[in-house]
Image (cartoon, rainbow, N blue to C red; front, side, top):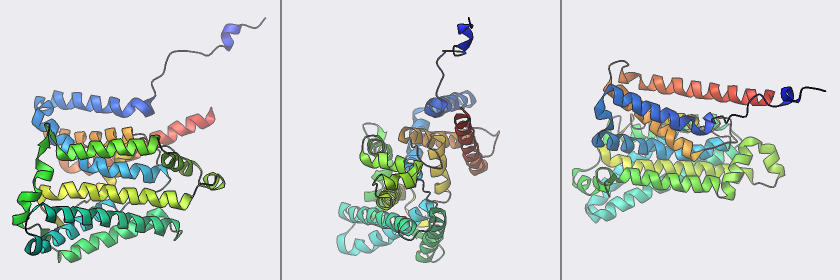
Length: 336
């Protein structure tokens, strides 16, 4: 008789799903490293600063998760943020003589930013779906357009928010609710909404289906163009929301505003486990990815081992490594 023991699986030990838990493990290890390099890393002030800085990229990255899950890409988010910030500042400065420096002026400025973000995202989406142009080309083009617009508005310099309105707008970035900074609260609400939309609605399932196989999705009666367009609109809304809470930090906008934000957003999404080629997205992982990127930058500020000017280099290496690991993982699955 054959030895039945030899036909049994080699091991029944539970395996850790690195795609699911890897980002959380990495974040814990980074926190341990940061604390070992400088005990001030876990101070209340530094943690608050770290979370606040994570909010901007985290909010944008939540939108990017939908775009990438559906098989798209958006390289224009940083330039879009700069253009939106510039228009916001110009509008609020012009409204001071009419409406004064009160809350209404700030609300109108924020509302205009949200509208501009939605329109910019809609333009990217329609050019990609109705125009049948590759998303990479479309967003590369709009990246240049948005960046040149803010440079034009600022006449090659810097657009500064009027000092009179800064006192009204400043709390949006610097104030806290229940000890938690307002940008972090916004990040939490966007993350929860994004998670619900991705995991508990038909829209999220359609994004995954389209990213997995667009042609099969079409045969399944999914309106592919509509869903993909909406992912870019969501991305634009997230960029606008991040810009609204970012502008009061410095009170200005220039051609350097939002530089490399697209790199950080994509890095956060990929680190979090979302597959770059589409078909699988994790909002929770994206949140951890944003925290990981900010933590790395924070650690670089605490140590002289690596210059903090190399933060972009670190992010680029992380993206390459994360995508390589994804390909290796998918390759092993296909073989089995």
